[in-house]
Image (cartoon, helix red, strand yellow):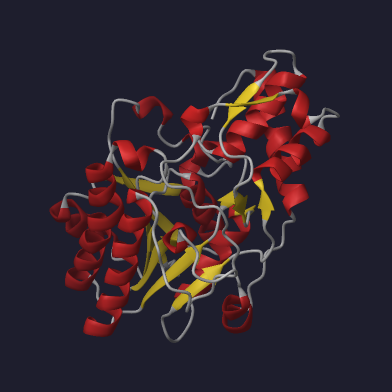
Length: 329
């Protein structure tokens, strides 16, 4: 019996790893895009961390090279394509706006075009972002809330989002976008504030450092677990009709609240160990993001399963374990 084949860009990232795990468990043959770089020694670290590195097939290619994407898709013949690849660190997008625009924006067009040319009947998923809401136009954001991007990253994501809608409407492709709100895990990159916090808490608890420097503690985010959110991605590709869905918990807290939970987990007080560093402030801040996942709940049967408290505890424990064992991610 032939397995379903899925192709994932961004497979070596947080979401790509959890999505690969989910699809492997469902009996898929999983293939992913591998962008070669000088840091080849760390490629696949997340896939190894969750124990599935030997169960996925990686293909050399690049989001900026349409020819390589066409070649890979012709080889794999996927029934589902998940486009997760991006320059995804918001702060860096101000320093690298062109790179961000090309990879996070134009890369989506390349993937859509390769799909249209090679396998137009494949189910396509685009990773859109709550950052597109930016300067929020409604206190709680849904699929009908107007967008107002506040960073080069958000603007690039918005381009990719609308191109996905355009290909769906122009060519009849089964192309869906998940407007995912912030989602974290032990696999989150160390440059992201949540992982910076949990790694810092672990180091302070172990006596390795005394303080962590952060930016805006009053920014509010709707945080969920990436493991839950990739289930929504898969559910979108299973629907008879493609569409766009907000994926969120519906609960919003501040960065300060996240810090308090992380420090409390190891019996410490956040205020004793945090210092504010203006270098970590955004040029244009997104003050509040608060998602309404009602459509996903109704049409996909999806809901977040992991509480914020459980998420924070899992991340802190993973960082403690890594530091004690001298392993890194």
